[in-house]
Amino acid sequence: MVANGTNGMAAKRSGDSLTLEPDEMGHSRFGNDLLIKLHVLMKVSQIYDQKNVVLNQVVKGTLELINYFLNSEGSLNVKVIRDGLFINGKRLKVGVESYIAFKFVLEQLQKKRLGEIRIFGGLGEQMLKEFVYHMMNLDDGDEKNAVKLRDDLKQLEIKSIAVEPLEIIEEDEFFGGHSNPKEAGKRIFFETIGVIKEVVTGIKKDHFINARKMKRMVQGAINLMVKDESILLGLTTIKNYDEYTFNHCVNVSIYSLAMGRRLGFSKKILAELGITALLHDIGKAKIPKEIINKPDRLDGDEWRLMKEHPMIGVEMMLKIKQLGEMSPKMVIGVFEHHLNSDLTGYPKLIRKKDLTLFGKIIKIADCYDAMTTPRIYRSKPYRPEQALAIMVRDKNCFDPILLKVFIGIIGIYPIGSLVLLDTKEMGVVYETNPDPNYINRPKVILISQSEGKRRIGPAVNLAEMDGETNNYKRCVLKALDPRKYHVNIVKHFL
Image 1: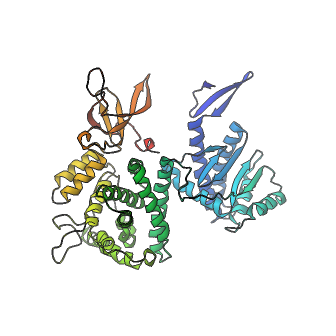
Image 2: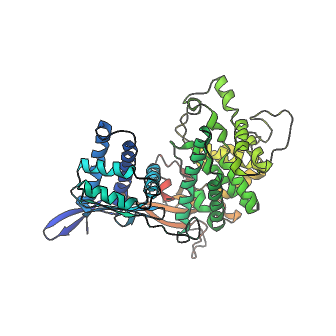
Image 3: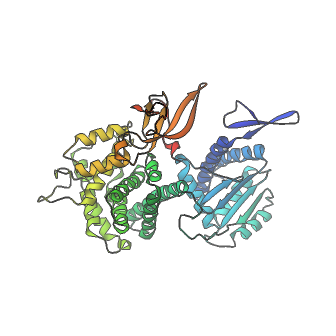
């Protein structure tokens, strides 16, 4: 195998000829692109007939990517194993931008009970259209769908596509005992975003709310935090602009759970806290979208309506019968998450009262995540250490003891920070030091420059000493702006 200048490709010499093959990075990139195309194609096929111009354009784009795999690898095999998609035998590493497409394609294949689609050449636009239309018209849950689709393909004389039924693999645990913690963390994180999205959509349309699934997700997060809280805390660096509301709710829940653990909450109380944090902004489901997404400052009437969302959230929570008998602190936590320690903020209180622990915890988690996330009215968010500095200065807003606990969890250089070391290396903070004496010495993933190329180095502990000099091997000089240095923080946690 010899290097080639083609992006995401490698050259392989066979006899006297040179052919292009996708390397691992290229395979993943083209796989994600294919996933997005398939998502659009499957969606469009449910709306338009086969003669539609939009459909034809989508078919052409999808066929180009299919032909890429056919030309470079000889065939295209899309297979479902548990809750993963494999393309030509390699598990697809899903990026943030393609996760919605991944979930849709995976769920459709699972619903149609199709476990494998093989394409091995000679595929035209009309063939692809016929295949997608016949596949999407299959009844959900029918175990004979693969046989039915084979018969359809035979009648249509489409010989270049083969399908296999979905293999149901029983697992002892919801998150799969065979998954490593990092994979389990990603699954919990992204699936919880999907669950909270379903809840909010269901509330808007007065549909059934699957609270049981939400409870299972929170329980999975708690179990993972007991093993390694840094995995989920690292994933909070994902700031999906398009899915802000749902992404934000999951991040707030993770931060809240981490604080609850440090405070010694039982698993039962942690579960209540995690669900409360997930639903803290549920009242915004009833606020007009044009107000939520307004890029300019809200006017008086709009701001008055926005300030009602905690109270609306309380009313909505009380209507979710599937949550069962709720602890009062869950409802009050949603009500209080915009109240400051000095009782300013909103909603306005008729008489003074002590804020609950849930309300004060969610207040800290909510503010920190909001400040460090791009918004439609603030494209440049605060860096983690900037957000913490502002929160420490705002003494009347946050409970000082809980804020200290929070800083102990995410560190002086919070997880996801880009830092410059005295060795002239850069590093991404991926785990705080559990010893409070070394709170300024987190664990980082090194980033170095060599021969004009950026290299992702090993993970190191900044508390590590040099045996000969008895000095620290590395020290943080300052925090850096990842945008300025074109460092994608998220990819270090996926």
